[in-house]
Image (spheres, rainbow, N blue to C red):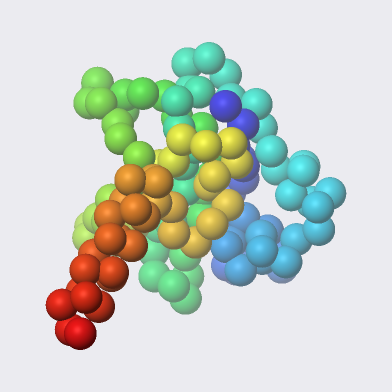
Length: 122
């Protein structure tokens, strides 16, 4: 697995790990952030956003199949209230670069719901 690996705060001069900065980063800058995950952490890429949108900290990297408590992890996003944070896991190469990380199954279901909803309204 290959994932983006970085950490930054919005208070930095050039917080490249922040989503809006990573979008405008050069190919070389993005290439420098790619990391070959070690065998113990090669199941998913992750993106962790901690704090509010005004003062968030973003961390990207690799993670294994289980969390530190032995729980099985799955692709998708989890929102936490205390402390305010969002953790997203994905299972494709360098997939932790986007704003919203959704596995293919969730995207397919969302599209089906949209089509069904439009059909019902007709």
